[in-house]
Length: 307
Image: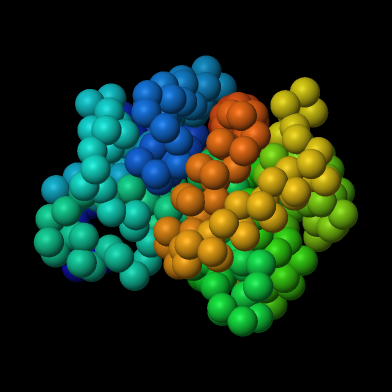
């Protein structure tokens, strides 16, 4: 790709692992800059990297520093993104401006998928993906994450879609886009904070090797686009769907009252839900990301053995 090296810098250990065909796991940075309070954001980001390493893969946290996409952030860069107030939330539409103006950015699910694909990383671990927002039939508020899953060939391990969304419409959109929604050792779509949603996944996965075989078959056939691997939050840390849904409805009403929408809506809702639940939602969020990191690293190892 023309002039790619001008915009993309891959950390040495990540680059060596990619070139050697070893297991690499991409990680997003929006969770650092906009998803959790300081200092828990930095502590969690570094802990997740350690979990990836302990499970035999190389972590590649992705962000933008001074207009350059960094695939594999240093500890100092993670701390910078976690503390700075000048970090833009970067999805597909934001890359050209943030890079050209040499700004700092934290990549969303969509943004991280793009950067991972540019670097040659196929496995990406996050908390939950965006989707169709409640009331989207009036607002047309649909996350760019879904469009990215349609076109970018990266597997996303997440605890389903964020439960602040309309999960039924999100699944319908993914079906239209031809994106497989695969439940990891579950037939039911997890709803981020909750293990249960009342909606079914397309297929059930049994183990990392089974998952890797499916990913390889998809991409060997030239079927472009991602895969959503839905991995439920550990049972000990979940919040029952009926309980969290009540809190979500309260936060949504406050967002509407304060005319909060667009890219500001999700951070507002997650922060407000944390306050309403007395911090329980944050604990659950951290637990599910840890769990996704373990599973994602295992899948990355299995996939690396297939190629």
